[in-house]
Length: 395
Image (tube, rainbow, N blue to C red; front, side, top):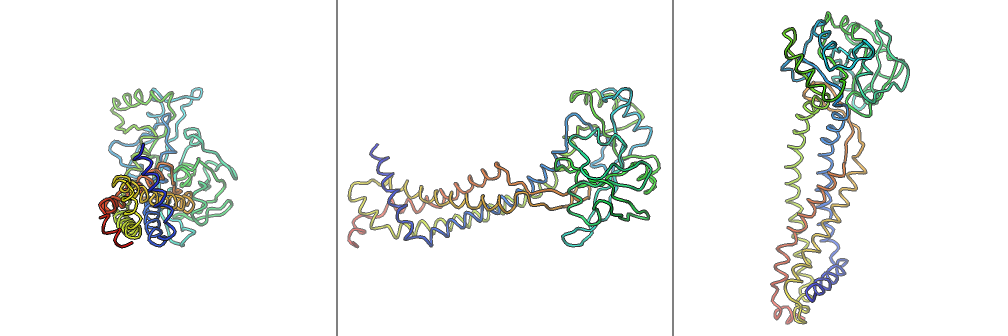
């Protein structure tokens, strides 16, 4: 109990002297704040991209592509194979009609609003049941495209990021002009980065015959995917990859997400090393300024351990203040900030929001805590070993 009381007393004395050491303490706080800010900002990009991709996924929907395809872009299915998938066991039916959508996926060039540069945007041909096999996708403006016409509907994110996609506008892709007749939302998922039209019109416009690249199917239940997979793999007429929508988008998000983290974590470590030196400088300055106080306390019977602990506590508290400031700034500046980037799996743009999640903020505070402990440890040892007699002679 005596040791705890001494720790409290020495810590209070140390904290009360902070105004006299404002400059050095501010350096430590700002250094840690910068580390947490950069950490949260960089990794919020990966977090937002993953959220955008995975929010489109469902265990009740399966995506069928050609075996070995890394994305829809490199897949190919014939009209006959699409019909085989639609009539396979495990596929949900609405009356006698299977709830499926055979789809085509091409890339078109659209200029960004932010810099007027061209970007690859996904242009997807869907069947009339395309909405039925996707969850939480709703038309919020205009109307659905008419089958057989050069009409398209655009995702909300694509409309906000790219030029020429406002309702009623006409945009040219290839040799054809397309009219924007509707806008849809999909809970901020990757689908909102796409443009949709009638799959038969898109086949004709890009001379794809009766071919498709994927078939989306609504499953009778999440467990039905195994029935569907087994049935299709045993059918010699088709060589498919069968993944749940959630698995498919998870694999699509993995490459870019890992690349961002590969940059983010080493950058944070390098900045953290600098912040540790800033904390060391601040705490060594604190020990130097408070040398006489510490010696006096030691002469009055305070042990070296309370002095050591109080110094580490001060360093840790300064670091945590910096962590809170950095995390708050990251959330206010970056959370919800909309950007688009190239999805390396599909070579097309994905529009997404940065997501400064509670998990990221917690990781930032853990980093601040480590910086504070490391930054205060060696100065704390120096304070605990401070020669009492020498310091008292300087009084």
